[in-house]
Amino acid sequence: MKTLVLVFHPDLKGQSHVNKALAEAAAELDNVTVRDEYALYPDGKIDVAAEQKAVEEADRVVFQFPLYWFSSPALLKSWEDEVLQHGWAYGSEGHAFEGKEFGVAVSTGSPETAYQPDGSNKFVIDQVLTPFQGTANYVSATWIKPFVTFGAFGITDEALSAATKAYQEALSA
Image 1 (cartoon, helix red, strand yellow):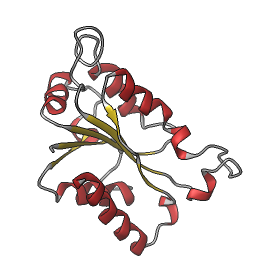
Image 2 (cartoon, one colour):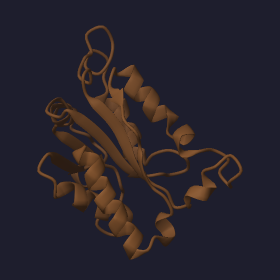
Image 3 (cartoon, rainbow, N blue to C red):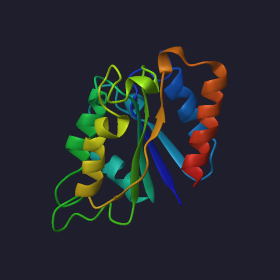
Image 4 (spheres, rainbow, N blue to C red):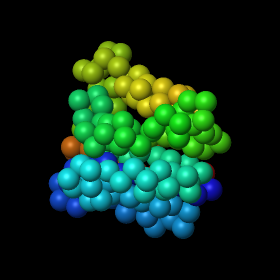
């Protein structure tokens, strides 16, 4: 299975600790192509044809990003708006995602305890990620279980190492 990991972090090489490590771990796998979207499009002007081609060549598409205000970084939203075109991704003629798996790999600043009904965020992570599952459904892709790295702000080296290994296993499954 060929997996495309689209990484949406505004400063992957600088400020990112978790997403950088996850992207590097994913890139080590033979069946995975990693695209750093902010590096590709620092001006925000997305090459729609190139992105669509990358998706078409994959069997699985994963959006990897840090959770920002219970959502995604801005470029990911722009990517969705521009790349997921009617007649390509959805609609009577839009079949680009049919037969593909689709999922997300997110990091959160808060620990997992914050993502509980009685936690500070009041929602479990699956509820926060519902719009992405809705996108998968809308483009006729098969939604796969999200990969989540909780507590990025205080993650230990040991926990990050375990997360990168688990990510590789998830991408290889």
